[in-house]
Length: 138
Image 1 (cartoon, rainbow, N blue to C red):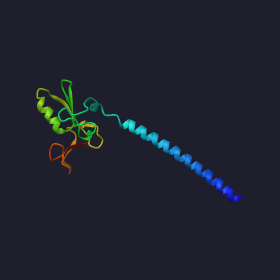
Image 2: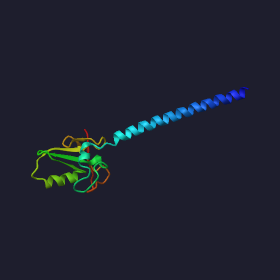
Image 3: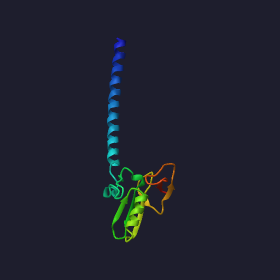
Image 4: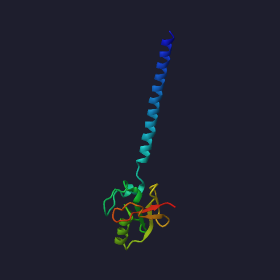
């Protein structure tokens, strides 16, 4: 009789463990889906300027190198890199920039380009030249 009771206890424990595993899996899936939904929203400047006007690069995919130039007349320009920002500044000589923002490489949020710490090179090549330029928060 003891043998059958031990088997029943093991079976019930196995069933409880299975319920716990299912519950934990569903809970983990819920947290993962919630995190993906929150992560999936693009920043406002990327929503306004999805692709770079000059090279067509996807600004959301390359959010770590994007820049935003805000002009005094209220217009703004979203670029993929410092290279395309320089092109726009050269083309729009009649406009005066109010603010130039660069994406922080790690957090991907926009910071003032003058206050950023810039890394030139860093072992990886850039898209347009030999040295890559990256803005970092101080």
